[in-house]
Amino acid sequence: MRLKLHVALLVCVVGTITLCAQSKATSKSFLTTINQKLDFAVKQEIKMAESVKDRPGKFPVTLDKNGNLALCDTTSWTCGFFPGTLWYLYGYSKNEQIKQHAKLFSDRLEGMQNATNTHDIGFIVYCSYGNGYRLTGDADYKAKIIRAAQSLCTRFSPVTGCIKSWDRGAGVYPVIIDNMMNLELLFEAYKLTGNSKFREVAVAHANTTMKNHFRNDASCYHVVFYDPVTGKVKARKTRQGFADESSWSRGQAWALYGYTMCYRETKDVVYLHQAQKIAAFILNHPRLPKDKIPYWDFDDTKIPNVCRDASAGAVISSALIELSQYVSKDDARKYLNVAKVQLQALSSPVYLAQDASNRNFLLKHSVGSMPDNMEVDVPLPYADYYYLEALIRYRKLLNGASLFK
Image 1 (cartoon, one colour):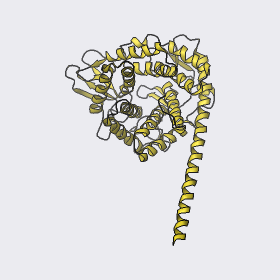
Image 2: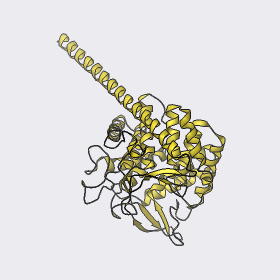
Image 3: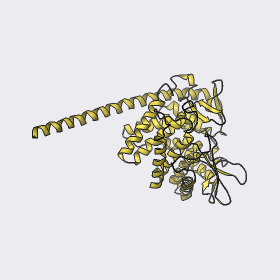
Image 4: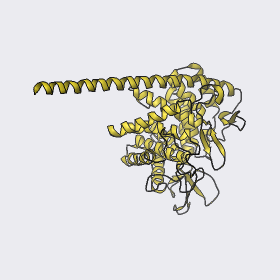
């Protein structure tokens, strides 16, 4: 009897050792893949920077109808993503050429820290100067982050309890789910200054959005219109989704990322629970494809014959990697498994350009605004930004490093 027990225990131990060895081998293989994709990205983004550096005030934004590189200036909400992408790649590679390009394109954002006419100042300043400050400690970048947060706060109304997204005239107070992403700028300014106003505005906006933007299944509306006098909700609509009651995939991604980040910054479990509810909606959705890269809207009636949105997949992947750090082991494993599937898909030839044919963008197949027939099935700078962020985050996990250093 004892012999049988010893044999059984030995088999169990050997099996465990084998599984651990297989797991380590799998992790090592995936780490190699991540490094290869990041090395490729460094080469691509240097080429991109070289192709645009002599176009003052310009940033890569997409491809035009003829497949040529299209540029934007600081009037576009996307202008901070390319500098941020360069900073991410500098943090990974320590490549001085990348660093110089990151500085050059960040400098092109000069003055945006003073902009009070856009809620996207978080995307614009935090993705660029925020990453630059984290990596260099540049005092000027720090000052710009703080000033940008002050500018963003001018768009906050204590009556509505949230930050206005678009300026559409008196009596109109629209707030989009995307705005959750801009709160990270406010939390950073709070940490840099100790000024509690920044944190209070961010928390108020997150709480109001949680109350009014979400349905019972934790899916979210794109736009909520408030009465600026009473603060009451007037309407719930979409601008970039399939329909007012549909679930626009990038909107769900913004929500997941935003509440995960809010938990990181506040440690308020209400935000963690909200993030997990959103994750459950996305991951359990019957129309989420096997590769976990969502269709542009979960409720487009023409699924599966519609566009995917690589940008939404990249944002979800990055958010899930972070969320995995705050939950039980079982949930962490589930989130990381999905994030890995997404990164493997995005790193495949289906989504990732293999050469310069994508005009040096990394990812293909993103959707800007389907209702406007604008930027449909094209590369977009925020898809590349969050794809790289997700790769770098997963790499840090595999190396046992902190996600945020």
